[in-house]
Length: 94
Image (cartoon, rainbow, N blue to C red; front, top):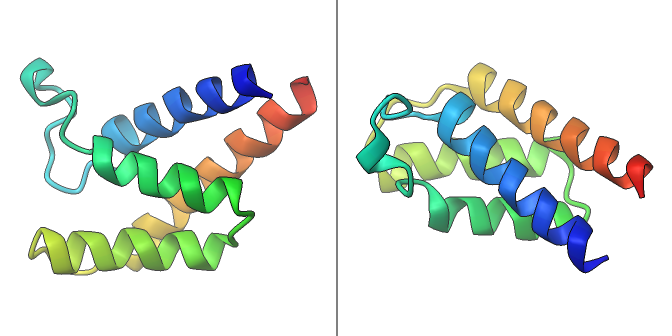
């Protein structure tokens, strides 16, 4: 299970950086850790079996409240679906 959690956290971090990327830093190597704290929160939501809706709400509120960006619910829902699918895929691999 520890290996599963470690792998899931790495995948969450990658998805947050390369796909969610609300401030557009995915091609900047120096910004690779930009979303680490949010990745940990999303990881926690996934481990708690939160729904796609709950994860979407977290992503949307984070980008709006913490970053001052316009809400992009459609994009955040897509990312939440990708995160959930990755979690399920990894669970099936164990």
